[in-house]
Image (cartoon, rainbow, N blue to C red; front, side, top):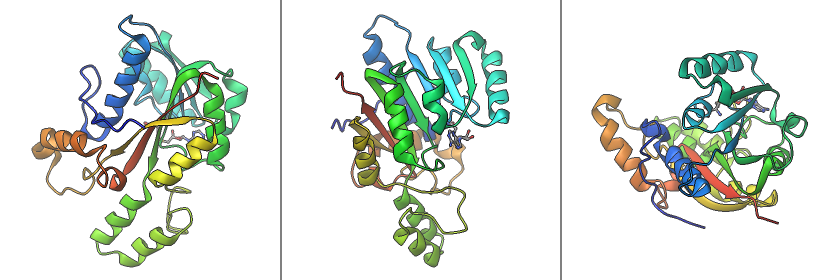
Length: 253
Ligand SMILES: C[S@@+](CC[C@H](N)C(=O)[O-])C[C@H]1O[C@@H](n2cnc3c(N)ncnc32)[C@H](O)[C@@H]1O
């Protein structure tokens, strides 16, 4: 597993919250294109209104967003039109369970599944579908909520009973009070990804302290971004971040 410190991406959006993810994606795109400027086929499962899809299309790549929400797809289309990349963004209304019906096996060079595995009924089935849609040698980018961060956040705000609930619950949720079905930890996520035949190459923490700091973002933006990039791959900081980002590769055979 590569455990390198992510570098700031030159072309990508620079919000501290997503700087680490963009850094990893940008490096993967550069690796794929190897200086040729080749166009990637990108599949964004649960891509919402295109927060990742549209900037990727603006970089010149062909992006298919598979998303169950009609409202999100309408926003996606508008965002793509505003950015002038309608011809590079395809919107498909379906959920992760339906992925085998809407995405050809091996049809994507890069598959994104960001903040979605927390909501699906069966994350192992979803991961199998993501792996199936990925081309041999291609990569899958996964972003999930981290149980450890949720426990810390509750404890630091004095909600110790809820923190303990999150700590011991099998899925890392507060029963009946949570909007998502599960949270992950680095080890359980890596094992789950391995079960779908993908090989984990990089794991980063996203939002090591970004959701905990009290200072206004305008006062902390640059320093926060630098801190997040510096700590994203460092244990134990990585493993206490709000979200876990994992880049896995589909073996060539
Ligand atoms: C938190 S948003 C993340 C959007 C986008 N991936 C991003 O990172 O900006 C979660 C998205 O997952 C979608 N979603 C919910 N359940 C899903 C499912 N079973 N399969 C695919 N997408 C789902 C929601 O409609 C929503 O757009």
